Length: 426
Image (cartoon, rainbow, N blue to C red; front, side, top):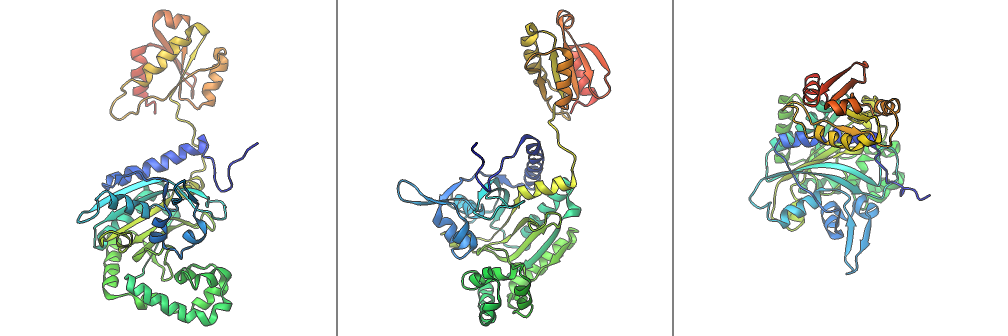
């Protein structure tokens, strides 16, 4: 039997319900903060990511799914969303001398070693803000994360880690000082760090190797290279976070893995998922628009890993999330199948009031007597069953059974809808 490609996974119905809860909650909060949704293509010219993400990053060097189309152009499945977002807004004239706040969601692709919480096709929700210079937008983006965790009941499982990289010039000066310090010690570094020393040296600060971390203990301090303007920006951001009652941890070695970051960087992390502890991360990238051919434009954003948030939500809420079936329609004989189908459609169309969602109605399929159909209704976790037999059809009535306590009552169609609305069907 053909199986799924390694690193790709199926999201089955039970998990998809939790997925929908998380994604719809996040989207709703983003809209409350007036971020507007955009949709981005899966395929982009490889050059976009080489220029935006950085040719020396692990993503571009080792992890992209790249192909040549029939015209010989090099295309890549998107490994992240920010570069694509900048390209889309710039191409459509939505950046220069404007402010924009947008969000997107969907799959990204990286050829990494698969493990729990890390997949080769993974899903992100990204939010990006353009044209805002001050730290207030940094604070808003971080506040979005705090709102996500509060609404999802995860606020006790996550913490905010934050740092500043300074300007691009400050980052370059620090990079040189770090390379000068590490080069004589290169032979003592772990294999990945030895490679990064000549390609992306600031990523060495992220190394989990104990010997490398011991060497880094005496490395130049990044904070000593941060320019005055960037430090003032960061100090004001921390004041805003305190005013918003958002707790944070200063992490002087937090640098993020992408070349486009400047100034603020942050991560929301958890200790409940093992090695894959970062569930949302972002920061400022004030030079990216210019790198991709646009005019200088201040920008900031984040990406949230839906797969990891889903895992964390399962850890905190271990109760299975069953399908939301409000009403299961049962009928006694095949000649009533059409009546049952029409009734199901009629119930779905009923207005139960502004505070009540439309009914989710399943009509029995596959025949069977009432006993068998009621077993199916129980298995579907329906709240109510409607029993339709010859007497009900003749009298234009319906028998409504509460599947939690077994109580049943026979009512007219109109009264059934009122009864469902009055008792809170959803």
